[in-house]
Length: 395
Image 1 (cartoon, rainbow, N blue to C red):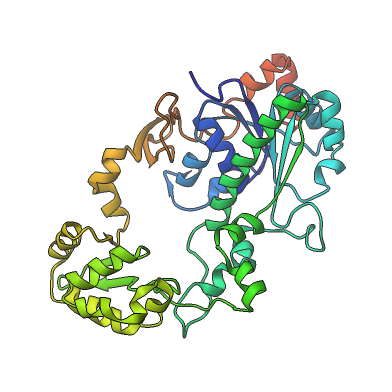
Image 2: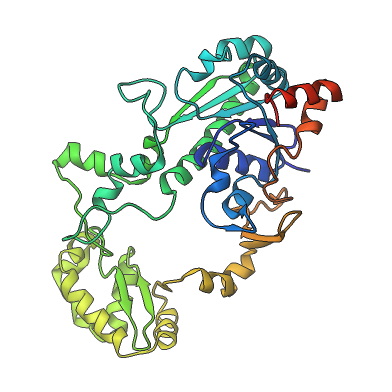
């Protein structure tokens, strides 16, 4: 049994936040129909590295999706959209506010055809407000949320992440919001609009900065790899050149660490009693911990920390991840058969259900790979499909 096997999703979004949300739903059995532009496709097809001209990021983003291409701006394309959405449970789109309305596909019109449709509208800045009409990407959310302001070294510039972080966080929020809306539909019998601005989920996961600002007037500063909430917390280099990360969020772990490195006297200091006050003495703690680690190889350090039940982890790159026994035990990496590339390795579904687990059944397909199947299911005959394809309405 697939827990979302009775849910049909139309993914008309592009790039990352909206499409990845649809991916998560497809992982648990939702029938996801990915709709692209017939001539341009989803720009995500061209993002990142490629093999034999085939985008590798696309293989992840469009996994478990049937793909078609329809020009929603064309009148006949709007008719295709209406037929498609009349039978769907969820629409995920990320057009600028007002675009669906301009194409005669407003929520009100869609609900005339299908009152139970959940419409997830994913944009940079939301459906209202002075910035709502601007183009928005995850990078802007990382800038405006406060993330970049607190990332980097204290004497360096604000730092953006080298990945689609805000989009990834937003994708999880969209998937969650869609499931909430579907549950609400069970009670009301009606669909609703999910209005998600990419600037908001990342703002939420940044913690209590807003609360502290309003209560105390404090503004977070860049601390590099240190934390303002606890210490020792940093990365440290071993004798054999490896980098290790340490966290002491729990008081008991902080005590174990300083005892392990031969400084039990620090536990007796009044300032050692809380994470916040320990952070004010980060220089002294880093000297003690870093000096001890620098005299030992990584394997010895990790073994000693494990024996002391203190928290430590090596800094991995992708080569380490591919070889790591913990990821292997969890099944975190899967190898998916693919018609274009033979086999594609990718991250697995990000959590496990004991009774109804998710599954990656296929990787992202070529543009329009399922158009005949999808349009045929909507009642279009072969001649109709050929005519629409010749007119550039579908691909």
